[in-house]
Length: 607
Image (tube, rainbow, N blue to C red; front, side):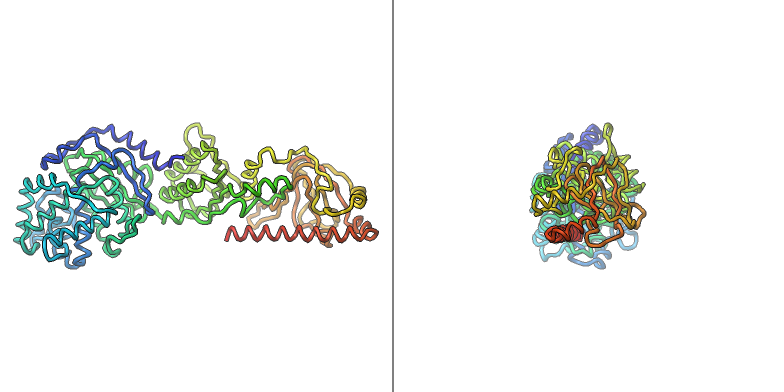
């Protein structure tokens, strides 16, 4: 099944690529050679999974996106106090190549404009220009997850035409912001902007910042954690130049653009996003990059001001139908069939508020389990709510799994509007809706029935007393005497056969045909089913141990035919035939032991 996240990005790419607005950057001659049709999107999760579409592996030069990461290196090498003396953190409201310096100190307003970026490059650790460059190369490789090469043609083009940046560098030298030869720092700045990346690379760089400075695949730390929020804060307020305020208002993500056509956006703790399209607006930002990030933010609810949880917290316990079967008592044929296939029923316990990243994590786990799955039961008992975007993805995944022959059902949604509302709104056209069960037991039985198919005993099928586990081992003559002591009774569907708390009924029952449910009262006021019984099974057998008060209620689900036995009559028969008492007590003990083992298995599965 295709991931709904991948499908979403593909549909988004189709919509946005029709936008032909913007122009190629022309102040660096080499950048005019880019194909205006190039357009890629990549989204990376916190465990390193990349979703990509379009030209997401097309190399391009990183340009001003490098500013955020070199600023990070300056913080790591020199510390925040030293860097803040040289470069401020206030939005300038000016274009990226503006000469925005503090009137008293001469410090650039922030590290995202050219003046601040050149100053940041000058503060990289190293005794020589070459050492400083090796430090930049190493840091960029840590963020991207592999070494990056320099596009020498772009580097030469930038160096040969970067006269305004030379003027800025000498002004920084004049104000004491740059120590030593400013041209050495400037050449490293030109070189860092000429590094070749792909959309995938910059998405991983963004994901590394989102992951607290640790690359989500290599697990290598690229930036000390204490500097991550400093970098993200400056990206949020200054990363999109004089569009930064509108960006934060409309998109709500720390971001950085480059005139090469790239845009990186960071959802802390959730996603890294990279977009590449070389057509730029008048402010030097990728037109398609901005539109893509807007649509992702709105469509998936990805905004730093939205409620967010660790996506891994969305999924709790995962177990199978073999660990926690339904509480019905299967016939021998059903038990044999389920023994080899019940593990194909997968329970997933979901937690907390489910946003897009949490649901993406859940869906990906389901995809991993689907190779050996017939059905998924999503237990929503501990879910507080779900966003509409997440509900839409979950419904799309449900339909996708259905196409692969795998059922996805829900359990314990109950009447909570925070769940039912978004799930209902997230339904696609012609989608008949979700299948939801009151509890895990009923969901498990439905999934078991899918596995059993024709092996399920039909309602009209009859079981003989010899099939009953309670009477196993009785000689034929004694079994005939027992059968003669019974009374045949029929119950219509919905009839209450036994009532919890009732006393004075000393009968046990053997089911010949039909199906019954055993219910106990729950604290919520609802009734909780503890077993479903079918042909060949008994209920009420605790009267054999002297229990006079019924501990549960029993209802006929279908038309039921039973044989009822008075405990007192069986006791008189046992006085004449002591073997009857021995067999009944042995089989009863075996049955109670099996029930205890089943309950222990349930507890272990849910622990």
